[in-house]
Each structure stands twice: as C-alpha cells, then as structure tokens.
Length: 245
Ligand code: GLP
Image (cartoon, rainbow, N blue to C red):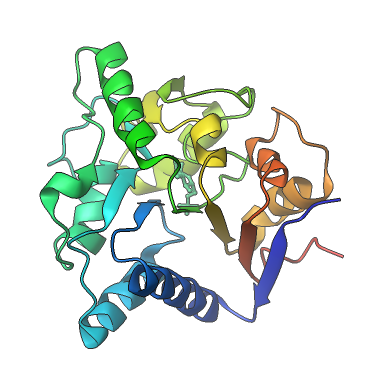
C-alpha cells in the first residue's frame, strides 16, 4: 500500500498557498536547507506567494542550497525558454540566494558527461536533498525522467518524448523550437531526498496522478517510483484529484 499522503484543495490558489507555506516552514526551521524546485506552469502561483510571504517575514535564503531539477539542452541561461531563466524570473532575482549555493545545469555544455558528473558530485555533498518539490508531466514524468526511466537512473541527458514535446510546445512559438533533449536529475537522486512534495492541478494531470497513486510501481510511469519513498506528500487541486476514489 502506498504511504503517500494526499492533500486535496478546492482550487489552484489554495493548493499553491499551502505548498508555499510548507516550503517557508522548512526554510525557517533549517536556513541551510538543500532544496530543489521545479519549473512549469504549476509552480507559478506558489512562487509568487513564496516570494511575497518570504519578504513579509524577512526570511533569508542566503544559506539555502538550491539544485536545479532539469534543463533543456541547447538553451542559454538568457534564453527566456530556458528553465534557468524561469527560476531566475520567479525566484532568484527576488530572494537573497547566494549565487555560490545555486547549482544549475549549463544547457550549452559541450561536455555532457562532465556536466552530469559535476552536478552529481555537488548533489552527493548534500547527502540527499532535504526537500524536493516536483510537478508531474501528463505522461507521469518527474523532472525530465520520462517513461522508460529505470529506478536507478542518475543525472543524465534524456531524449524528450513526443508527448512532453507536445505538452511543452505551449510555451514556444513553434513546436519545432522545443528542444529534443534535456538534462535531468535522476530518479535515484530524487528518491534520496529526505522529503518529497509533488503538486498538480487541472484535469489533464488526473490520470497520471491516479496511476501514480493506485497503479503498480513501473518504469512506464516514473512518478509511481515515489511510492518507494517514506515521506511523500501530493498536493492536488480538485481537478487533478478527480480520478481518485
Ligand atoms: C515539465 C518539466 C517538469 C514539470 C512538468 C510539468 O516538462 N520538466 O519538471 O514538473 O513538465 O509541467 P507543468 O507544471 O507546466 O504542467
């Protein structure tokens, strides 16, 4: 049986507020927390609330160690479609992170092996992140670990699935502009985190969420691997939870 805790909210705003407050609680308790936060449309409201509330509370991020979850290959930090750009736009530039505590991927790297090794080494120093917040792809991917990813997969380059390229094309002018490859934290590293949050809103996530919670643990649905972890909480709006019993 799954040990995953499930919290269901009436709407996206309430879900976002709760997730933001849970993050704030953990940073207040442990200012040197190591954390990884996602990109995408799901986190936008959470980050707005996180920034607003953190400023109100004068919460310092100067000791927070931040790890990027995933990044498109071939996009520079200045490219507005890159995940670094997103994180900077919604988080880094508003909060007093110390640049030396931010570990991000170089989407323009020419040496993929070195890039992944460097990231893994940095991650190892944390001895497992304190908290990872994940979104979920409508095909059940977490970070950019696409269906077919083995449980032991580490940081690596991934060939994006057609489904993900289609889903993410909404952010790009043209579907052909969506990168075909990405760098991602692996499942093994995600499962090493001490605590994991996953949040989802909207009916297009309902099937993946229900399969992750009720289905078998399978490489065909990477989010199902979260069932192997003892401290996972799903935060869902009513629509994303609409296929749950
Ligand atoms: C993207 C990212 C994930 C993200 C997911 C959901 O492809 N690689 O890290 O969690 O898909 O994105 P969204 O919140 O936009 O639905």
